[in-house]
Amino acid sequence: MASNILHIKDSYHFEVPKALWRSHREARDDFPEYWVRLDPDYQDWEASKLYDALADSSWMDDVQMPSKESVIQDYHAWRGTRKHFAKPFTTFLEENRELEWFQDQLKADSGRQAWAQIKNLPMSQGYLAEYEETAPVWPAGKIEEYNHQLDGKILIPQPFGTLKNNYESASGFCISKFMVIELLVALILCLLLIRLAHRMKRSDRPRGKLWNMLEAILVYFRDEVARPAIGEHDAARFTPLLWTIFLFILGCNLFGMIPWMGAPTSAFGVTLGLALVTFATGLVYGLKQLGFFGYWKNLVPDMGLPW
Image 1 (spheres, rainbow, N blue to C red):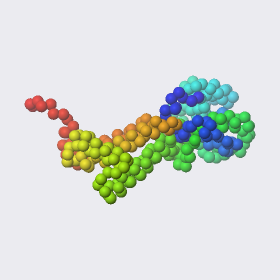
Image 2: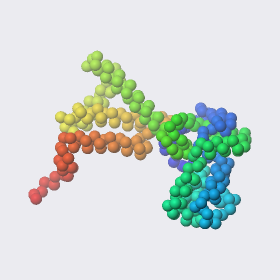
Image 3: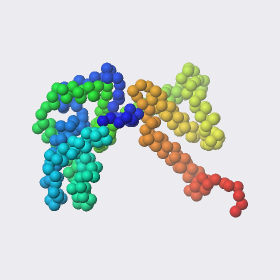
Image 4: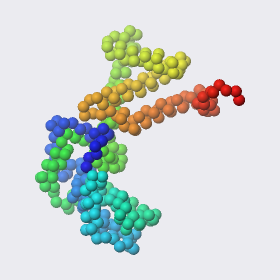
């Protein structure tokens, strides 16, 4: 079941009103791979296959495993709760502490190694292909229901990775909604600033609203932020960095005001990346100017007290 806070999180799709983007998929093959993996019928088939793989594994030879029917029934009950909705059978085995027959075997190093091999089976293409070849086709009612769930969701293509669901990646490099917005903001800034640079080459007199606005922001950062904080000598060197970070954050926040978009700066990874750029800049330049010991000594405040 969907979390109450997913609407403010990053995702691997853009969500718009359902009437603006209808899903018209006609067969199981038309749905994303991860959508098939989340289907209850596939999860039951996968659970049956994994149970058989466990039963055939040598590390379970000395274990009295419950019957397959009872394990899958327990899995149904566990998966039916809000907390564990649509989670796979592998997660059920790992997180359910009541399965002592499995948890005890998992404590040994050999058990963890054997389980790692079995656990990776469902992610292979051959596993899913076997299911699609042997399982009955999805009925029209299920396809209609899944189309209804995907109405309004513009899925982002994932050529470099695979997804676990609409909000989590399974493997590889997955492209999220915030990444697309950040790239769009960066392209807009490049176009604006390159255009401004060409105009400034031809004339030193600002003309037009855009030129005046951008130059006013630049002068403000140079005179009111960089010079008082850094000093007259080095202000011009760091003004481009301060200006770029400000405009990037401003652009991301403005996109957050557009319906169905979102602000990338609400993601921890974005703010962490900006913080690391700022920290690395201060660290590298500080060490270059003051030396290793001088830089760290400069961080200690002067108490103004005699020894």
